[in-house]
Image 1 (cartoon, one colour):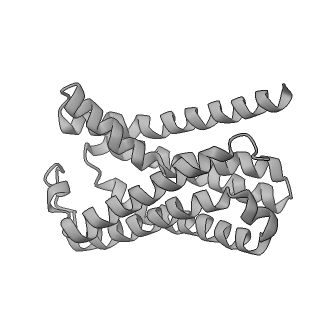
Image 2: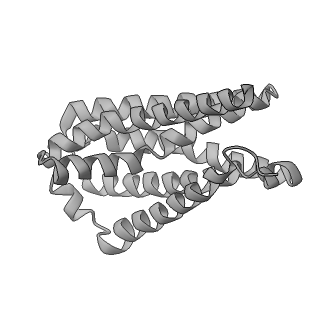
Length: 211
């Protein structure tokens, strides 16, 4: 019998795969020098394009790794029948996020929208790190239910860049905001929206189980 919420695996897989293909194609084939993206930045004298390019590529690859690994960690069949593979997927997911924090923070220092956007990315990174570490520490303590909840929260933050893109597009094209203004709003709201959705889902599951 299919458990409640298991149907979400399918859209998660679809979103993860499509986003990975979009991101890798856009940033490594269509515009590998990030020329279009850099047009919207106010670049200071301390900006080193070569270092920034290397680190944003590392950031993208690690983020895509986490996005693709995340849904696999939620597959019950793997978790129950192949626990060793489940642990390996978890290590890949958590490791890719931990390794990504420093590149993410460096890239955030030169974020489109200046200090306000930088602060937003710093907060996003802190929430991402916190939720991921909580997922790790709870499973180390064999708190399986808590681990699952924190993994859901962590993956919601992992998908924040997807929401950032959508929110930015809606504000700019749908409501006529200037690109930079829309981007700054999206930076701050993307992780909040995703975390709200994750908490709503967790509350829905809890209420369903209690019924």
